[in-house]
Image (tube, rainbow, N blue to C red; front, side):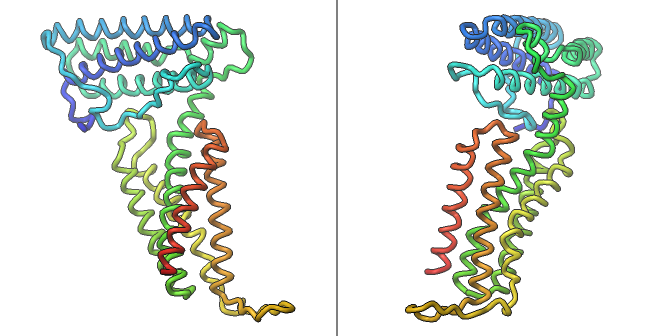
Amino acid sequence: MKKFSELSEQEILALAISLEEEHGRIYADYADGLKETFPASAKVFSDMADEENEHRRWLIDLHREKFGEHIPLLRRSDVKGFLKHEPIWRVRPLGLDKVRIQAEAIEFETRQFYEQSLNRTSDAGIRKLLGDLAAAEREHQSLAQKLGEKHLTTDAVSEEEETRRRIFVLQIVQPSLAGLMDGSVSTLAPLFAAAFATQDTWKTFLVGMAASVGAGVSMGFAEALSDDGALTGRGHPWLRGAITGLMTMIGGVGHTLPFLVPAAFATTVRLNGLPEFHVTAFHVATFLAALIVFVELWAIAWIRSRYMDTKFLQAAFEVVLGGTIVFVAGILIGSA
């Protein structure tokens, strides 16, 4: 994948043409999917598809004037920094809320692309067109308001509120959730394998801390280097990486701390008719750690449901099942 900063003026135009063509087809699919249930909204998306196609024609005319007939094939998947959009336009029937949210995300990303492209070209003609397109995106009325006008709904949020929510999710929730999931799940196997292999709380604590810190550093650098945030609006890469790394470490440290339980917690349990059972600090620590893991996994499922438009039961099944598998694997390996 190429970095956005490495693109030539011709490649920027080629990418813009590809984006406008892709967005026009997406909006046309929205219109087709909504026409039976929400005909007024379908007309909005049909008009937007026509507008994207008009932008594409302007860009092609400028490319023909500046660089000739051949347009290099350059797509969003070839350039580092673009978000991957879920293909909800293929699903029938379409949900109006999900369509609105995704369309606004596409508009926001496109505006970011044109504004950043202005800094990458010095040609007057190219700058004029890119500036006009950026201005059109900035002045573009929010899709929520458009749909509200068509349906006379009272719950259409303002563009400013929706933008704040989108930025919060992109810059804070997503990196935090990615880190918390990785830290909570990836450290389970080494921590509980060490616990059951050694049955030594201090050694287990050291293994858990090492796994948590290592995972935090690894995830932090991976997130910071994955996307510079210029096109996606995901914020400064090192801030986003710091959030991801910190939440990864917190996710692992949470179920590591119980292994600091002092030996004073040891006791002997006597039940009538049953042999004596000696409860050690290891037993107490392992029980507390397992309890914290349970809370962590359900908290992650709730966050995914609250902010990532995922049904709670689906999120719970995916997160809790995956975490349980890793948890059991750690116990089995440590007990071998």
